[in-house]
Length: 312
Image 1 (cartoon, rainbow, N blue to C red):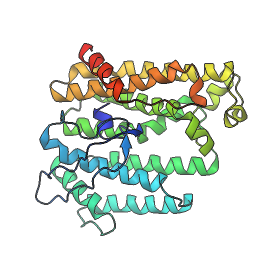
Image 2 (image 1 turned 120 degrees about the vertical axis):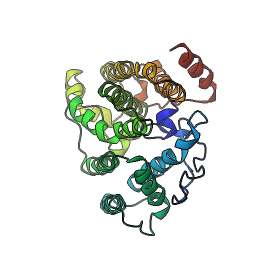
Image 3 (image 1 turned 120 degrees about the horizontal axis):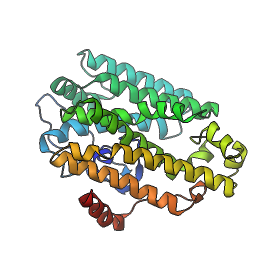
Image 4 (image 1 turned 180 degrees about the vertical axis):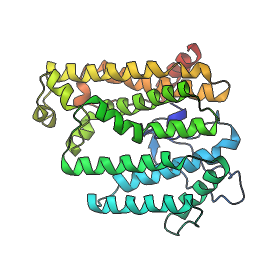
């Protein structure tokens, strides 16, 4: 993980590991729903904020728990890439099973029980949930193999599956499905994913996660080994700042969505946008230094975010 995305983390992937989250285990909206597991991770922003309509808190918590558990399978502990891929494939198979109406198996019943109820009650698009898992699996394979992204288009295709589905799922819960709103949501989600990349360069590159594209590196005359050695220069600074500008342009292109959504959802989204932009402020203030330094949003940033949200 920005409240609306960040509420649910992966509008996602979005942006994680900072301020403590709010437990989203609200009472289920249906007697058949098992309570979603509580959030135990730190996120950049609260999960399931008070701005969220009460009747949507349980469905949102179910989606969050699904994505959070998949993220843990992909990223936590000391499992090998092969073990992670096998677990995610089993998780993906379980999604297909419960989507067909089969009872959740014991291993992840606390995740798939609430999710199955949400799919039934809200006709949730299962393909979007599957896209998230596909992106997790791609990330593992790319990291294992030391692969890089050739172009921005290829990186955005990853964002299409790793981040954009969460925004579309949330719009679905709010019964918003026009083409313009969906495109703007995709821009916001992709921007949040890109911002997370440029925020986390100092952590991701040593872990063999490469999101600065080959084409951008070539255009700025930066060799890949300069990045892996964390060798900061005017060229790497320009490369990172160019990508930060791309993320800001993408966010601003999607931001008009806040004016098309009335009531609580509009305020949620204002906080999503301003939270992402605040992280980007900190990245840009380093002037390329995020190659070696990670800045994060803290409690003192929230008044400014609220003020900017009010001014939108």
